[in-house]
Image 1 (cartoon, one colour):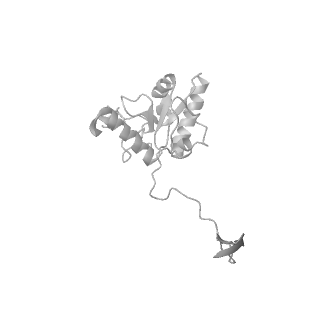
Image 2: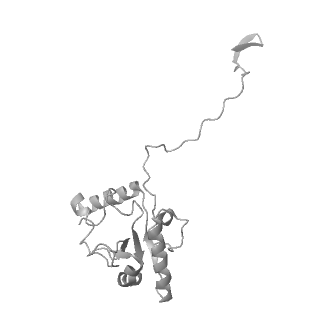
Length: 183
């Protein structure tokens, strides 16, 4: 629509926007990442930071298998009574985060075969299903290696002093160490 004005003998056309008489439309729905997106940070704990085994507000601990979480907390109490502070550097991880760690290892080591010795792929990682924790500092790792079986906790890989899972047999013994995450 336009309106013509006569000013000083010249006609000027001024556009005029139509006025809506209908109800305003609802605002668009908020954007989401959608079901096809990959969570590449779930369970991430920043480098150099650790968690108390009792900090269940963090998904890295909240998503752990309850039996594993209880065993780690019981072990932490026992270690503390001997002056050892047990901290968590990693627990549950999302599939996407584990994939990112594995992909980074492939880039670092040059092949999936070599990378799998250091980082499990998401399809085999016990972190993804909440059945593994990584512990720090080294004195806590050593304490847990010596005492973990009484809580059901075992070091699994010879090249990972820090990685523990519930793995004792019926007699309370840990299985033989695997050389690395690849086998």
